[in-house]
Length: 183
Image (cartoon, rainbow, N blue to C red):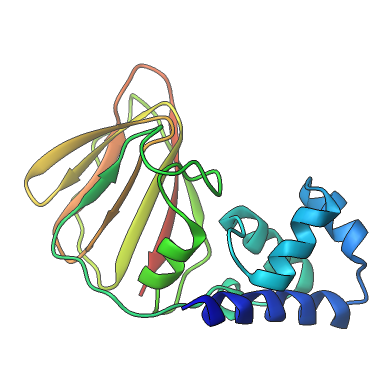
């Protein structure tokens, strides 16, 4: 499994070198010290999803060209409350490896969704693949397979979207959530 992450580091390094970007400037652009960035390239471990997304945009490649992993299928929802699990990648409770392992299929670019309290609840939808939601601001009510989950800022949910699901604002202020959908 560790070799899979090392391959990620090698892909990142190869793209950076092909685009003639120095380690120092890439580290500065990502807001990390050069030692941390160097470790990402050498090991491929603990690379934040946000950094991978930024590098994909900078180097002009698809997010999925950098982020790959094995295969899994969910049968029900997994909710991680803020502060639970490991505080890594700005997605509390999730490690890069966790998402890479789950998202084996095509990954759409992450979408930032804004929900207003005055919005009508979204219609429940179903689709293939897997879905990951991370609440960036406010509170979101996730309706999933006949149940409701309140997700507050910093909470995340990972689920099989073949079950009816939808999101709505869970408070009096607008809410934002980041969603990754792997098809």
